[in-house]
Image (cartoon, rainbow over all chains, first blue to last red):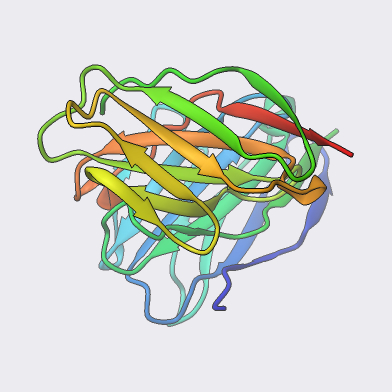
Amino acid sequence: EPEVTQTPSHQVTQMGQEVILRCVPISNHLYFYWYRQILGQKVEFLVSFYNNEISEKSEIFDDQFSVERPDGSNFTLKIRSTKLEDSAMYFCASSESGGNRGYTFGSGTRLTVV
Amino acid sequence: LAKTTQPISMDSYEGQEVNITCSHNNIATNDYITWYQQFPSQGPRFIIQGYKTKVTNEVASLFIPADRKSSTLSLPRVSLSDTAVYYCLVGGPDTGRRALTFGSGTRLQVQP
């Protein structure tokens, strides 16, 4: 079964540092997403990406965040100047048709900001 | 997106059938109902989606009454590995291009 691959699985960074979370979506998928889940809380939408541009973003996705698809396979989330409250699991997801059938999520990157 | 309400938690034993009901009174005509499963420290996993009546796959069944104001996810003969959080989501066919809104879900604990 095709998978969405995320690296690293766990990242520890100091407050104020920049981090880049990496994702390899399923190869024939066209829509890409980032979600996050703070420990014990709900899964929250951050951003969706289609045709090399952001389709939608939440209030959480402020100027601190950016996404990029630097080549044909990777999809990255950059967090500039990390804050303690950015500590969370970050999930990448992709879908083929854009319908809410068949989103495939990755296993996540646990980001810990110290 | 229609608001959903589901129980916070449920307990069951191995081998039993588990039914998790979700209420979505404001479901729109073109909305679909989708269920996801999430294990600890993993991303949500798509289980099943339906529009009306009954849908069954190798993992679960989804029952949707005629008024579509609720739906029931049925897990036959659960095992310990079915312990997870189950989310009910409601949205139109284009929500894949927009945010999925997850609620708090139903935390299912399966005991031996």
